[in-house]
Structures are given as C-alpha cells and as structure tokens.
Image (cartoon, rainbow, N blue to C red):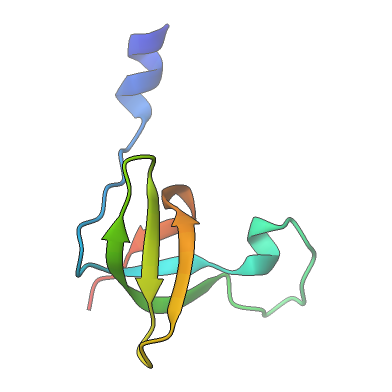
Length: 78
C-alpha cells in the first residue's frame, strides 16, 4: 500500500532563491471568495528552508512572508 501511494506523490522541495507562488489565504482557510478572485499570490522568493517542510518567503518589496507550509506553494517559472 505504501509503494502505491509513494508512486503518485510528487515531492516539492524548494531551494533558497527559488521563485514560488503561494496559495491565496481564502483557499488555505477554506473560505468562499468571489468568482474571479485569484487562487495564487506572488511571486515570492524563498529565503529560508526548514527540515519540516516550511519556508520563509520575501516578496518584491523585501517584506517577509511566512513561515508557509510547502503544500501551499508551487514553483514559479519566469
């Protein structure tokens, strides 16, 4: 059973300096939003990584954002 699960799981690990998008807060908190509300925020730059899968992010204006769990992030390709 474990092998079947691990076959489909896509590990997400980010390095310091990677650009990422963060899930909007209304999705993280399971709140309803208007129809055309964006689902992703960013891009942010990863500044710190922790062993438990959390990341500290910085936006374009160098204001710190986080810590954020890695399950709420996805890589931003520029």
